[in-house]
Length: 212
View (tube, one colour):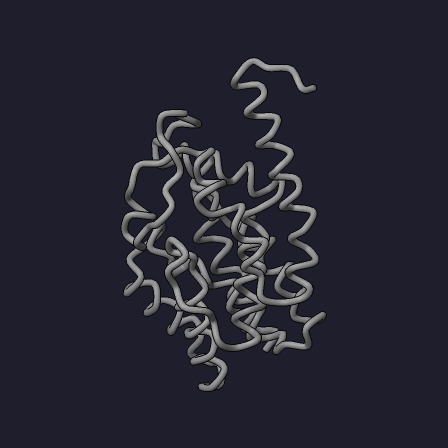
């Protein structure tokens, strides 16, 4: 299956190399490396986890038409054994956040890839990606009059008005407690603390206050 992995890596790198919303090849590469670390710790199917991590954003509605994306992935996985192919398709169909309205993922491998993807959304990398994504959408950095949304449908999560800072409260600060695996929970702790520290400093600076 190593040939399949190498083919997937080459294809996805070429396709997403210059993507400008924070879902570029570097994101895919980091998620894949995290998926391998978590899969090894959790004794999950390494091939399924690695392959799913590599192709997970090819079906993301932020980047493409999902229907076309799934056709693309099916073609890329044409030489993969049917059970593994179906498993990979199921994983990439179910791991998205979508306002927190998606049902829990079912397989260990889906839990691994979901944790890996969510880990790359938090911490220092997550902070940087948040502002890149907000800029790509034309969202403001911060607006104190625009409060974070508590309840969101999948469509309002994607299309509703928000800010980069609100995104931390609407999604990112929730991810630590949504980790599936023990390894994912362990890796999330430091990244979550990094975001909390950043937000504390941000609000001090925004309000022009000094820390006590």
